Image (cartoon, rainbow, N blue to C red; front, side, top):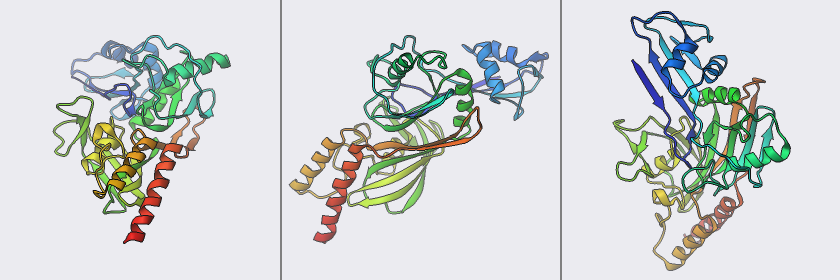
Length: 349
């Protein structure tokens, strides 16, 4: 019996890039090294990839990590987490500026600007983060990067700004994939959402899956009949009249999780066109107000979402690393405009 769970992946989606395989050995299974056993069972997994997974502690048998030479026995329950690279072939180096927050021989942390796609795919064959990394490593003469452009372990949306972690080798990628799978990576986002929240903090739960009619959208299924379990925690940072600056912490990393969850609780992210945030959801009917909101849309022509902090255990040094990034200028300007507007609402009252 083989049950394979794989994180859906599509360019521009926010999510981890790993695949989880759960395999139960047959009752008649003869003793066989687990690396050979998995090589025969998992499609497109090289022997080296499987051995890296074992070294990183990503192969569990009956909930305990095992080495590559472990002999599989009848009834063994095997859990494997493998990095799931994007399906791309040629990554051409391009001279694109990058804001590098941290770099060593194993990892590199980038502060990605809004508007940059993470890797080439349909309609986005160049100008991506991986093209930029390929150009950066080529110029640097960096021989630490085995494939020339780096190994992704997660992604953030094209129009979401913020911190992104990239591995420089397959071993590091494999170890980081396990941290994402175990929810051991600390990530905090800041967002501007429509409406004034009733509570200062809360938790949004509900399975997130593809919308049945629009495959580009994700939606929340409260009854768990479809999609995958998703949990988002939020905290109000500042109330700005008809919009709110919030902090979001993810327990899971589903595609468009924050965007879908906030739409579900009727607080879509400001100017999130895919989830209805590009309309005037809250406020007055005055023409001046409508013009104010339109000007705000021009200042921030994207969803108001920023991946602000990132924390993980370094796979080699085993030290906890933590990074923080400022809100980008467009979101800062938006907060300031709404802050000024909100103060006038109080004065008028």
